[in-house]
Length: 164
Image 1: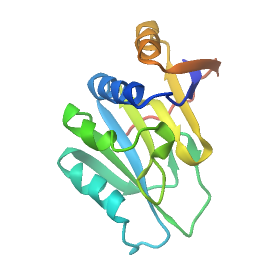
Image 2: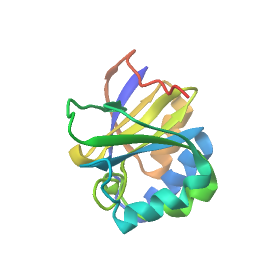
Image 3: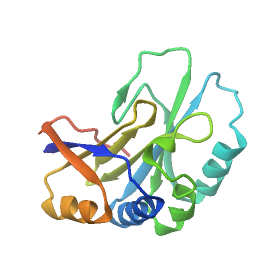
């Protein structure tokens, strides 16, 4: 599988087309809801996203590893939440206009997309890092037509599998 670094979009229109495409191409998407304490309340903006996606929620659990990240932090809480991909999530996923806007505290962190039980698109927002994992030439072409700038990094067998 080829691994590509992804540059953020230049326009809001490109980002919206990307979200539409990914919601139709993927089976699931995920976020990390970060908290300093288990009982910390979410900011209003993050709570609205959480509540707006509730009907699409598939799974939620505390983790120390998710696509693009392994944390050794044992004091804070990282809640991995998976949602079914559906175009009805578009308005919520388009509240922000950049891939790297998905970050604590205003929003859940690290938007990722999945199909065939693996993560094929991941964002690590605080590091301004986005990665596409694929050998699908049509997917690459489609995303480039939308405006995604891809830079080949390396071949890998290490991908994040979604265990539902």
